[in-house]
Each structure stands twice: as C-alpha cells, then as structure tokens.
Length: 297
Ligand SMILES: Nc1ncnc2c1ncn2[C@@H]1O[C@H](COP(=O)(O)OP(=O)(O)OP(=O)(O)O)[C@@H](O)[C@H]1O
Image: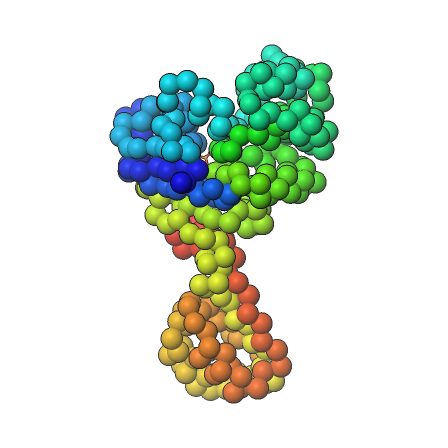
C-alpha cells in the first residue's frame, strides 16, 4: 500500500488546467520532494489531493482511502501544512495543541511541545502575531504532534532560520523512520538532498519523473582528474568517444567529465594518463533539476 497514490489528476485554477493528468506515488516511510518551478502547480496538487481544491478528474488514495471518505478516517491520518504555516490565526500554540489532542487519536503533546520549544515558538501568543518562521514552526509542531501517518508540507522551511532548518530536518527524518510518509515541496535543492529519499518533478501539469534520489545521484557523476601536465593532444577526442561521456571541461591540468551510467571505461582511460588525483562526485540535484525542468544548475 502506498501512503499516497495519485493517478491522472486534472485540476484548474480559473480557466487554466494547471494539472493535466498528474500521477504520483509516495511509498510508506518515504520523504518525497515535489519539485517544480514557481507556478508549476505544486500547491494546487497538494490541495487537490486533500480535497481542499476541486479536482476535475483523477483518482486519489491516501492510505488506500479516498480523501473525501465519510467520517474522520483520512483527516485523522493525514496532515497538511500550507506555505503560510499555522492557519488558526486567532489561536495560540497552546490552544492549537489542546485542539490537536481532541482531534488526533495518536496525538503526542510531548512531541508538539518539544518541537515548539526546539523551534522557539512562543506558546501563549496568537498565531496571527507570530513571525513568519514562528508561524511555520507552530504548524510543524502541530503536524508532528498529530502523529498522523501522512504529512503534506508545502515549503515547510519557509521562514525558518538556518539552525531551525537543520533541527526541522532531523525531526522530519526521525518521523519518517517510524514508518510515516511525507510529501514536501521545496525550492531549496541542497536541503532536499539532505532530507528526501525520492523526488517527483512537476512540469506542464504532469509529473515527468519520479525517482529515487540515490539513483539520480549515482546514474550521473562528475569525474574530475588532475593530470601531471597539460592535457595531451587527442585525449579529449578519445575520452569523448567513451560510453556514457556527456560533457567535458578542461582547465589547465584539470579535466572534468560528466558521465552517465557505467564509468569503468572512463576511469580506465583516465588511469592511463597517470593522474595525480581522480575524484568521482555524485551529480548534484540542481543538475537534474536544470536538465528536467529548465533553469540554471
Ligand atoms: N487563487 C488562485 N487563483 C487563480 N490562479 C491561481 C490561484 N492560485 C494559483 N493560481 C495559479 O495556478 C498556477 C499554479 O499555482 P501553484 O500555487 O499551485 O504553483 P506552485 O508550484 O505551488 O508555485 P510556487 O512554487 O510559486 O509556490 C499558477 O500559474 C498560479 O498563477
């Protein structure tokens, strides 16, 4: 069973079909990043999945249940944090938490209070009077306290300072390691790399690729070799002809090669040049993002 399964989702904003048949799965225990350019429809997708925005077509299952199932099943098992953070602006964190205790069967007051303390959220100030980061901190403390098996987080580090981003990442990874599942959107790719295990790329209304982040990293690599002297004549043509070699940069004695798939032939060819040093680096997510969605890596 997938924590979240979306098939052929079509949703509009005004007259525009923002989602045009999006398919997406979040496996249990996974933190899946939903990536896409501004305006590509990430928030629309999250809101449509939860029934907060109308769906024109498509199937959605959350923990095998339709999101609009009669009764409290889905609401008690899935939480959503919008980009603005806490939405009950008249209420304090304490009131949020006592509400949470009544709504969620697996509510943990300890976890909510500890998260709020770690993210420095004042407990007795109305949410509407909190700073952007504090309001997000409150929403995250509430979501983690809820004990729900599924979380949909729309840019959850919005407004968090660097220390709180690190703390939040640790809390979220711990939450997923208990078998819970997360779909989160983010534009901060280096943060996604440290947090998520899968990524879904949204473009032109569809998910154009869902991939394991480790696979994405290892399928493509950057091999950097420092040679003992200038790059010998003919080397570049020879290396360029090897399987998987996609791009090349030469800077003095340093050769940087972009390679896809197996890199044994390339490493053997580089070894014959007696390099001073060879390093293989996984490709940063920003590269895959630029290739799939456009923009600058
Ligand atoms: N309330 C609204 N009324 C009309 N159009 C809207 C509304 N909200 C969003 N849209 C449009 O729908 C499209 C998708 O917006 P959405 O907020 O889902 O994108 P997003 O990927 O979450 O963007 P971002 O990364 O900027 O947060 C955009 O073109 C946007 O202009």
